Every structure is written in structure tokens, then in C-alpha cells.
Image (cartoon, rainbow, N blue to C red; front, side, top):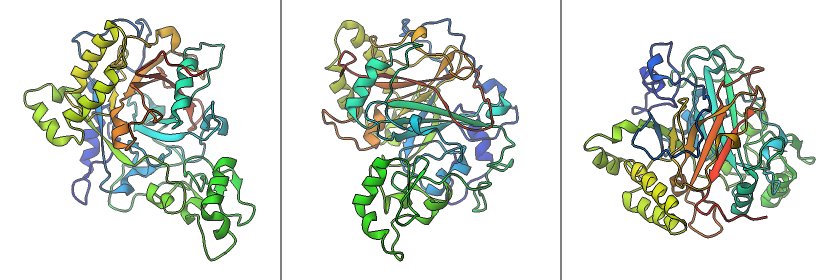
Length: 428
């Protein structure tokens, strides 16, 4: 992720960020001690009691409104939440079936992406994880039932994770590091995207103007009803940004929202901090000054969830979770790809065991925990606290321990485990 210092960004900021597990590039092997093993041997069940005081090296993710949205474009290798995805491989996007909610059939909405290269893996010099979800709480409740299915049963999901990785030498980006001086550009154009959502590949073309493109019939209808019906019949009026007509390059979320869907979550940049920095004396005052989510706000949100828990196990687990989270209440993401890393579970119930985490469907390797997404993100997304609004206790992401690559680029689907505050509530 780029670090901004006024209007200029110094190149050595990249080296500093590479020391974290979620970071922008710059590491030629000098920081091997900072990197994690990257292979999860699967010896420990995730439902074991992990409420001990042994804290692993965890990188925390916080969100900020981008000072320069241009730095969230794909050739700056950003970590970001909301807005539009900055596809790492801009051409070979996930297949249409993977881009839909398996319950309602609607295109999934972009939640966040994390740039997480692996220095010891040449094929993962660039590596980004993308998380998408259906904004329907009804679908997420149904997802709770499906995620327990084990192969050969195929689970239907409303939360999906895609991993993309590239070697340093690739068709899309320069071998050199970004300079942040206005001269950085990607190598070549990307896929033509949906004129409504700006997220998924636009395989369908408006039969009238032949300019607007869509990822689905649903988005074509939405765009038509929102004004494209009139605009496409007048050559001098366009309801499609020219940049979207051509590729994934050179536009930000704001460009899309001028004429298309306004349902994307607000765009934020994700910045990194080491959790250990908040264990030192005085860190609480620093965090209170830094965070947009105050401790009182977090307490209010967490208390509403606590009231829905049943049993002493859940309450004990929640107390441990809250104690650790409140050291840095603004965090929205926790990252640790260590082989023995586990999520910080809010509840004792509803945790998966290792048999519940499916193996990589591409190489057969075990999947290991890599990151979790916290409900504080919904505060920054301005999601209302209504009964029907999307909500979760945590979303844990598991990825191929070998980070297999196969062919160059493309996207491999990984595994997400969603824990809700009321895991017993299932919609058939």
C-alpha cells in the first residue's frame, strides 16, 4: 500500500511497508526474519481453546479515506476496502458463475482486497486477496448452513474469496517499483467492465448504443431504468464513462458513481500497524487519537452483540475477544499467515475444525488461516444497525498453504468462514 507524505511519496516507504505481512512491494530478501512460514500443517483444530495470552505477530488493518484516490489504482498494488476492486490480473477475471451469489443469483459486491506478497515464493511476488459478498443478510444467514458442508458436497456461498498472484516479470506491470511521481502506468489495457457496477467483466453489450457493457442481465436492467434508456438513444449523451468502455485502467470509484450504481460501499485505503505497538504503555492514548471509532462506539456495538450470545462459553470467548480488540478499536482487519496462526474468535460456538476447512481445489494442499475481517468495517461503510442490515461477528479467510500458482495470473477461489452473533439462526 502506498504511504503518502504530502503530495510526494518517497520510494523507501515501499521498503518499510514490505516488512509487514500486508504491504506493498520492496524486499529482496533482507527481511526474511519478518516473513512467515506460509505453510499450515493443519495439526491443530481451529475449535481448540485458543484463549491464552500467547499473542502471535499480528498485523492490524485500519481504514482511512484516501488522500489521493489515484494511488488505489491497480498498478500501485493497493490494499483497500469498498469502492471498486483494483484487479491484479486485469484480464482474466473470475468466471461469471463465481461472481454471483449462489442463493439470490445477484452479482457479488466488493468488500475489500489485501495486497499480501510472499517474498520466498517467486510466483507470488505480487499477490492480492479479494473478498466479495452479497449485501443481503438473508443470503448470509443461508450461507451459515452451507459453509458446514464438506466435499464432495458443494456448498453454496454468499461470501467468496479470490486469490491472484504474479511473478515479478509479468505482462501487466513493470519490473520496477512505483515512483508515485505521475509517470506510473500499467502495461497494457485490462478487461472491459460492467457499466453499472464497474466490478465484473462486461460480457454483454447494449444492443442499442453498442457502448455500454454489463456483467449480468440484472445490471443491464438497472442501468436502463436509471437513465441509460434515454441516453443511449442520443449519440451526444453518454451514460457510460469512456474509461470503462475500454478497460479496467485509469478510473476510480467516483468516475463510475457519476453515472452508474451508487450501491458500492464507501472507498477506503487500508493501512497497516503492528499489533505489538498497541501493547506498550501509552498506546491506548495514541489509538484514541488516531481512530475514528472511539472506544465508546465499539463498546456500544459489542454490547448489542453480547446480548444475543447464549452460554458461558460464548461470553468468555467474547470477553477475551473484546479485551484484545479494544487495545486498537479502529481495526477492521487482522492478518497473520504464520503456520500456527488462528483467528481471534468472538464466540466459542460456530467455530470450524480443520476438517471443515476444505483443501485447495487446485493443488490439494491444506488451507491455512490468513486474515479475518471485523464488524467494525460496517461502521466505516455507514451500514445502518437495522435488523435486516448485513452484519457479522467475524469473517475468517483461509488460503492455500502452498499459494499454488498454476498458469500465469487468473484467480483461484479460496475459503471464507463466517461467524455470526447468532449462529443458530438459519434460514432454510
